[in-house]
Image (cartoon, rainbow, N blue to C red; front, side):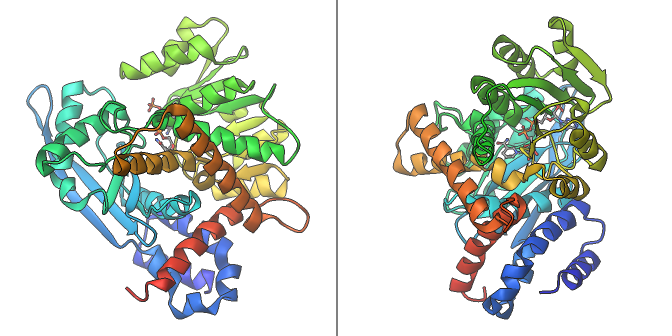
Length: 445
Ligand code: NDP
């Protein structure tokens, strides 16, 4: 494999798909050596078969708003690779959604799912629908129309979607209700379901909890722990609140949260009642960042700014892709950050990652750090198949074990001679080997 030739060809085939091309480049650069040391991969042309999705389904989603206006959004499902299990990955509802973003997310998902050690392939989907400011009825009608098309292509052994940006428990409920009605059976086709109807305990907080378990493992390599550390995090959605909750429980101080309009700095730390209040605001479908700063004295709202300018020991991007760039990385470095762990997918730009690597700042990629979400989705699928329900302690223990295992895999494939761990390389190689060897076993299909 020659990375430059491969990427030039891919750019010609998919011009303008910036996020997808960025994600592919990161993986192929880090697996190049292993790939070329194992000629069986090249003989079977594994890489070209891996970087293109198995299929992409696109459809229109007509729905009616509360005033009776007929709207049309675009819906997608990218079924990327099912070599190790059914396609598995979230649905994102956000106005920025396009094919490049879903292809990058689907591609990342292949390796992340392989790292969990559970039998799940990679996929992703979503729509350019914006749930913000919509009524419950509008969201329900949209989700029902979305599922009216998607249900033909998914199933517990085929493709199992879940949540992502803009898709939480409420949306999964509406989507599942429509699937159940169309299909006429009650199966584990979506994960993130309500705990009364097949959902796993701990799933809502799993991505954030898992991320903090991973951070604990990273810290342990330096004989450190979370107690007394300051943590800056962005966003306050599905993943950020779980991360905040667990980090606070383990003695860290969360000093920032953010939204698209700016960030909050809270020198006292965000925990307990403050987290409960933020969750209430979130559940009521409102902007959360500004109202929070009005209620809690001593907190400061920084309009139009990102939280990375605040001094912290650990930075956790938890909002969206490329939300932390080279300028932010330099600021963090000057403020002596010790670790950056992506909880969002591809939260840092390649330039930012280069700065962390060149300056011995520990950095771990989303596909390892946030894998606890999909891992617990996998545990939900297992419970659904067994018609069993594990208690929260059991699920949490398994999640913890999986995160420790992912960290070990990163060390195994990413540890350099000088002892520094390249978590990007480690995660990519570990995930790639599992998928590539499975593809080899199955022949050219
Ligand atoms: P949510 O929609 O629940 O939360 C996203 C948060 O980020 C919200 O607080 C949102 O603010 C904020 N946000 C969105 N866009 C921007 C922006 N451009 N700048 C600053 N803040 C922004 O999404 P999730 O928590 O589910 O997902 C967050 C990240 O984690 C994504 O990268 C996702 O792919 C990844 N992830 C999610 C998993 C899950 O289990 N949900 C699993 C693994 C990864 P507002 O609501 O005000 O727009």
